[in-house]
Length: 59
Image (cartoon, rainbow, N blue to C red; front, side, top):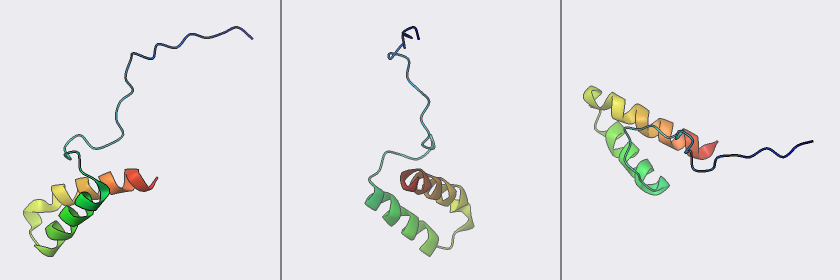
């Protein structure tokens, strides 16, 4: 089998949501708890992004 060269300088796309700042898991969970506790429907996008960020971590 011949060797295959791989270009390691080309970055793979991130699987993390782009609209969530870099947070530790604990910070992300705390933000999610505050957003859910507020019962503000205007924050649904933030809640979904935080859940998505945590789901990526779990996988």
